[in-house]
Image 1 (cartoon, rainbow, N blue to C red):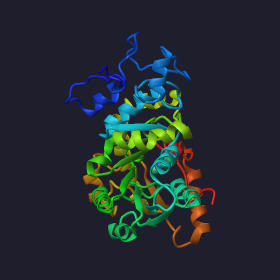
Image 2 (cartoon, rainbow, N blue to C red; image 1 turned 90 degrees about the horizontal axis):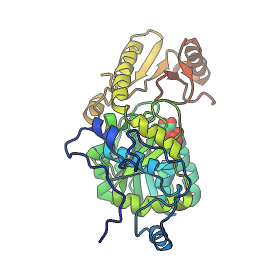
Image 3 (tube, rainbow, N blue to C red; image 1 turned 60 degrees about the vertical axis):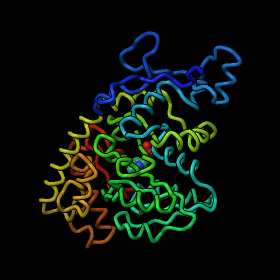
Image 4 (cartoon, protein in one colour; image 1 turned 60 degrees about the horizontal axis):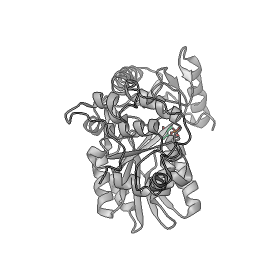
Length: 369
Ligand SMILES: Cc1ncc(COP(=O)(O)O)c(C=O)c1O
């Protein structure tokens, strides 16, 4: 029987992650380009009606329409899956799009989710408010208290969701322990790996079933595009997520995929440098009189320092959070005043909500509050 799958890049079995980051994807086109091509096309011409029918019916893997798939997007997906150590990956228009895709693919009315209470704010809103409208209940628990996750289990629990380290307080979860709880309950564990990226942490090594990414952050690494991805087994991606993507359409644009694909080529070296620099900054901040507390997993003072060092290869990603002196004692108004004063006193930092940019960025998480 002829092979109905897309061709693969043939790499030696023992290649290192840095080689995967520049080589994995699809073989070059007939023109033999060395740098991956950007396929800016919304649809693809089919050779004949019978092939078109077989491709639409998913009997043969091919490109049909860029809401379903596109060669540049596929290159990004294959490369990220190889870096994360998963069989497959499906790209999404944003990190939140990837989380939405996960929820639409896995959950139905009457299902229950357990989520860390420390994850990114938009994730809390999506699970706690938007999914609740469709009859999916979410219990929010302490990121670091494994017993709380276990106590929150219900007979209808389908998904456990954590982010490690969390945005912004850099709490680290024990991925192995959460995976064991999920497995016992017949649920899946998803980990948002945005802060570490596969260059510093591969959650599937510790038992995670799904890895979520905001490609907007370190994967692009240059603050240019919004992108997202979900990495998992081929079975989950093919059976649960591809059908949703085809009809719901939170697809990643080929242009954004190309930008992030090229970003992956320098991911490892950037993450090493940025996390080393973040540790220097966190250590310096810890010594300043005007700083009440610094949150950075690479610091010995971080409550999950040892766990972070066991799960990650870097010093704790590149985001450092800190509380300005007096903020806790003086209440919300003073906290806000002090934080704004620090932000406005910096000379070259960009005051912006993004992270993972080569330019140092600074923000107060509740600036608008
Ligand atoms: C940990 C984490 N997950 C997900 C997201 C959402 O990503 P996006 O902005 O690409 O939708 C963010 C954004 O800041 C984030 O920090």
